[in-house]
Amino acid sequence: MVLPWALAVLSLLPLLDAQSPACANLTAVAPITNATLDRLSGKWFYIGSAYRNPEYNESARSIQAAFFYFEPKHAEDKIILREYQTTGNKCVYSSNSLTVYRENGTMSMYESGREHFVDLLLTKHPKTFMLSASWNGKKNVGMSFYADKPEVTQEQKKEFLDTIKCIGIHESEITYSDEKKDLCGPLHMQHEEERKKEKEGS
Image (cartoon, rainbow, N blue to C red; front, side, top):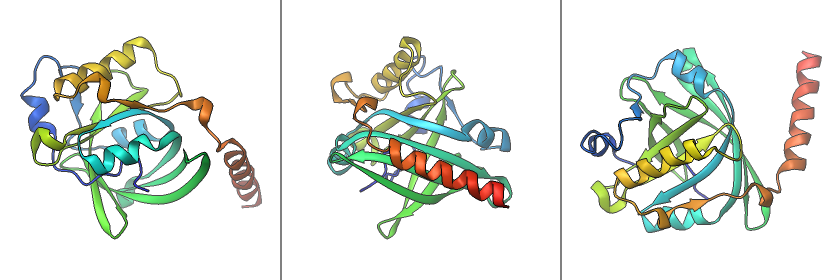
């Protein structure tokens, strides 16, 4: 199962730059600084996405709910990822690390034998961000949206919708997650208790 953000990509930034002012609220992050990584640190919820690539569109549609933790390692240019994903009416937990390419504003992760890249895009809201994907231009363009809460405000959602329209995707193509379908609560609680005990014992 490909993670909601982990998709083989080329840069979407030229498309964004050419679509002003619809994309004016976006900040293409390059370079990624320690302050950027600190902003990404913590718990995030997968809100929704839209992908033109059939393989990844199908994968995204199978995700009922998902949340994850980012733990940046500044000196190593890494981010530790712990993700809880509900798919097929079951909870799937995974742990991995992302490599941060600071200068060009991208991140990558190895999965299924290959390296997947995403471009990081910051919104005007510090509690949301997006990851972009583009395969050979608009034919396979894609975007995913994340927030620090499972539900977003109308203003935050509007920014995502405006960005989707800006890159040529119709609102009807978006797949949203549903927190009510999350089945990872018990496992997450178990892991948090274990982490708490480890810290107390160290």
